[in-house]
Image (cartoon, rainbow, N blue to C red; front, side):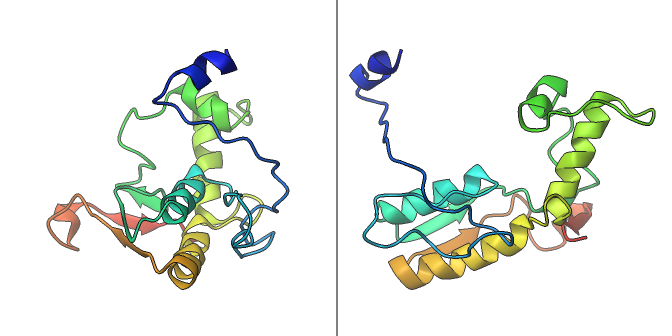
Length: 161
């Protein structure tokens, strides 16, 4: 199967040993050494993707959606996740009368707020933005789907606990 992917010119696979500690409050808050051919690893694929863009030479990175909180009480748009997609990340079973989906959604909200292994994705992203600017000169900006900070009547709640 791996050879099939390598034969496809549109897929690039990069094999390297993951020897760099995860980027988070619990671990270190620095990029892999500039001489290394390693990408940053964190609790979110977001950090790796942004590091890859900077590593490949991007000068401006525009974020279109980054899970750092809830919008109208939802972590994603309604019905974005079902029990199967949540189970990929949160291997949970319902307890205390909650459904399995509700239990996994609560785990996701806890991760957003910094309550899951003390990881705070918003704080880590702010630190990562500064590190990328310092090392690569890249600027990271967010594109909001709303016309202004009024959010067109929606209510945003930061993921912070």
